[in-house]
Image 1 (cartoon, rainbow, N blue to C red):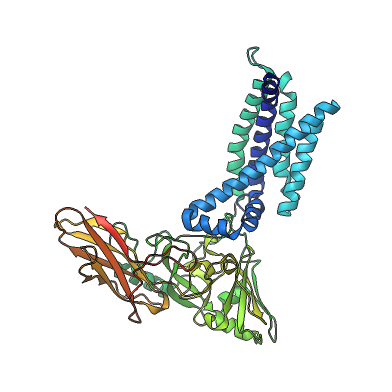
Image 2: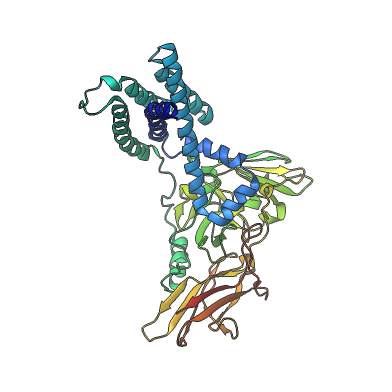
Length: 493
């Protein structure tokens, strides 16, 4: 036991330095590539996601939401750092056996470079990860000869030296990486009075309620299959319409913006959110009719369906009739699309869940036979219409002693006919006030209800009726596989 303890004690500094080398490799890759697909954590994250069983992926989405994305990212970091650490420990052991002090430095540098170059496809940028890792190991090998107080033994010297390197390089790497991350999208489009009038009109229609966003969302949610967004500049972007077509069509960004555009409010709701979650938002989108572009190519496929592909390797399959009223979007609230929302171009399919609204769109393929989309392969409902929902986010005390409750209601292209509120747990119902409809075929409405509260606590329940006269389902269900349903309720003091 004492011998084992001694071996562990002797190996600890090497393990620590290996971990530090791995962390500096991550920081170095970030400094070289920024938060782009060439950042080494990106392909590792993608590998973990694609090799994980669907049941695991679905459980993480349903139970953890956005936190699951963060945990996936951290898992990728840990896997890569652990791999570099194992390389350092193994090469250090072999170097001792061969009496070759240079072997750990060479092996760590070359091995890290090879892994990053192969996974990212960027041989030059891979040096950003490899060289810092090699420097850390070099410092480790040379540490016994560095000037240190005599009270600090060699193992502590190795650990302390590596810690200093990590701290300094980490700060510098983060600063450089921030500058390397491209600032794409989000810039104002050409001045358009129609867009400004629409946005101003939406602001005037909005209810002002603490806890509930206005009709045009101030903080629009984002959810993607990857943690790092693709880097696509408008000057390089092209859309190809291919597959079972009479003629392949290619369109660049300038040609797209030269076409007659449409401005329309549309709401997007995440299929993976919980019933009263906040992953449902609305914006004013600018684009061109998608179906018209597909028609240019002369689609002749037997399945009457298309597959949309994105720059991040995401894809989704739609029946051709789903493209009716769909837009190829390049603008959001009077600005170019932000990078996180699909810059330079995305698809917007009215009435469908956010999971299938393909961002960073680059190809439309007309199919000869039907196929499954990305999330359908993992068991999700896919391209089905959204569920009706009334959310309860505002719970406010008014100056006159009354209570105010409110939120948003949404039913896709079916629209919202009415929202009802119960302040006694569902025994009696009262009609809530609704905002005027926005200019669009797929937009939410705000609702609010003000009342004199009873003494003590009481349960507020809210439900919506869609524009076709159907009351939303009362029964609660989780988000998998077709989106959360049920009446929202809150206990109010």
